[in-house]
Image (tube, rainbow, N blue to C red; front, side, top):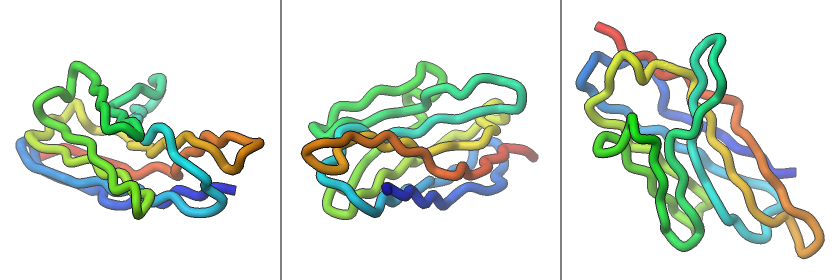
Length: 120
């Protein structure tokens, strides 16, 4: 079992910043991809940013230049630094981690979600 614990959400004014953190623990042999998704009410979950084990990153067009994803492989941690936040960034943000649990099994785990609200 792989468990993800997220932190860092909250209420912020437009133009402000927040940093989300996600720590993976449990039966983990290796991690391939770590990422953040978000979901607004009655909408589909969408990719915000991903980072691979090699350090390659991928961002949604709507957050490019404002959000930065990074990872600490030694601590199985992924961070999302969110700057210049806009009201349209308001959503529940979910951490996602995929990798290998052991030589026989992969895993793809989700966090419980953390609310980010951008409002004046």
